[in-house]
Length: 438
Image (cartoon, rainbow, N blue to C red; front, side, top):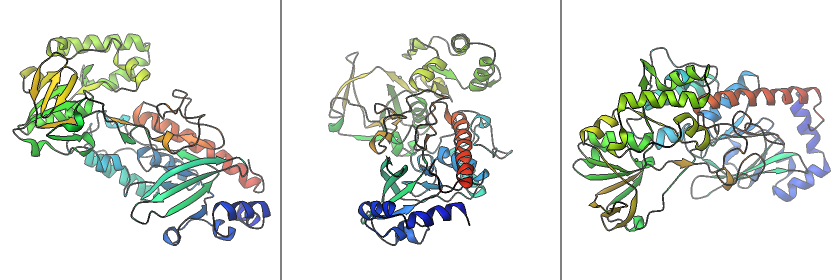
């Protein structure tokens, strides 16, 4: 008999287990102790489903990476996704001209490289196609339109209880229960909106970059982009290319140095030199190539790009053509905003200007504290693991995190492999002792 079937059979006749779920799941235990199925997923409301394999929350690149690494080791998984597709951030909330900011070799998921014909910096459409092929290759079929509203560990049963709500008017709730929970919702789950005096009463159009697709709709309009990260700089370039009149409130680095990608050069130097020395080299090269950016209103942080990324999670801006537009005057740089009145924006240097559109390139944040009832692995303050990479991937009681390393998809790949290996060891141990809850 399959070890998991034996466990389920024993639990179905366990009076303690039966009594617990009759009170908490409002259904007979025989309905609980069965593996999930697509047909059963819409059959009833307020159901509890026993999931013998790990539950992965999030079907972005991080969730797919863990599912694939587990599948390679013979372990299936249940992937829960609140949207209607994989990589919803990439597919639904990014602008059309987006491409990977790092060379493709630094953005591959485990076990499957990018197609050889892809360019060095794949486009958004190419990256999504790669992820869809990745999911198909490893047979990953997420359960879509399932928002996790609460996940907590049950000390009595030594299992994770994950409560979800379906998208739609009915809002059907389903509770899943498993030994393992992998948090893969990532650092960019929810938009960050700045607090600016008068922003809510702005008379023009206000949008976050998650809603921005193309500058075609803004030709001839004065657009203020708030946020100087890679998204803000790229949106400004896109607006400029569509004959809008962009202004930006804004460490910038060339995307390539000495004939190779800036990131690739950084990784090579780090093999031989400490971070602070590599930072100095990068800043020296950047200053030689870009000149004194302070004269254009672009102030540099007091620390280098690698240290900045490590300490704050902020990614250095890799120039894709925006800097030339700033030097030519096609894109105007402005200081911080003091307040907004009607269509008029007052900056901290007392300058007053009118705008038709404000685009908020103010980034995203983790939403883990809103649904995960755990204060050990994740910080309630920022929703990121308390321990820095490479030690933040594993918590207690079968809890894991992936996609929170602040090191992009390279960090995701490292953690995905670790998680799969750790779960595989427990899976094998349970196969030998199916009647023991480890």
